[in-house]
Length: 316
Image (cartoon, rainbow, N blue to C red):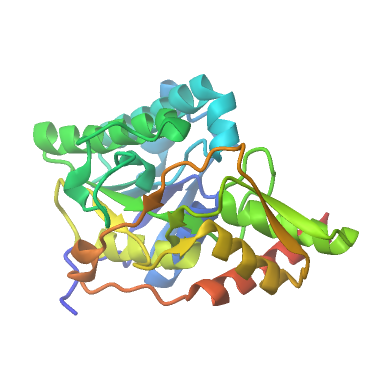
């Protein structure tokens, strides 16, 4: 592997959104690099208020920043709160990116989402598919905000020479996930549904849609490792896909979760509910060419996620 172009050892690194699943995983991974991790979350500063963000970042005297803070949720949450998803995410990324510039933070990594790509983008999706077609309507508010974040990083690079980069992860899961059925993504929702079905002795478990859409998933710890790799080895304007390179139907994923959880009932598909994008697979060639590969298989990752879910339930 080529030596890093940015050495994290001895650096002060802000992690915005450190309490979230990806932010927490990134903070854990950064701690192994010999740097000082500075948490930045809603418990310390209102990320939607520019003055508060500016003051916080100025006081940190940080060298680098990972922007993992965001308002996130699944299809139902996006459909119910479109204004919140657009405004909150635009405000958070705008305030932090501009605040980092004002504070003289030299390196910034913005975390986006694979939903930035067109609904019918050619598969697997390459980075240059961005803005080539209409977005998936079920999450367009979140996607538009994330696209704006990419462009903002590129604008600060173009105008000020800022070393701001962007990473677009695929669907993520792992410890610290959101298991609220009204706002969660597919894997935590399936884990909770399967667990509740097993505990209640139910004969079946229901999922939205036909179960045929194909999705790619990456464990949060793998994503964090990829982000650290990008911080150390990447400095350019184009965003970089971060994925596992493998895909599975939602139906097969549900059955795998049921096996991991130990629920032996039937799987029922509610075809009156939307499927979302029919297929969403990232092209990871650019990141692979930098020498990075995922390490955690899906079944292994699901078993780990379920253990973490049980531990979290036990603490309540």
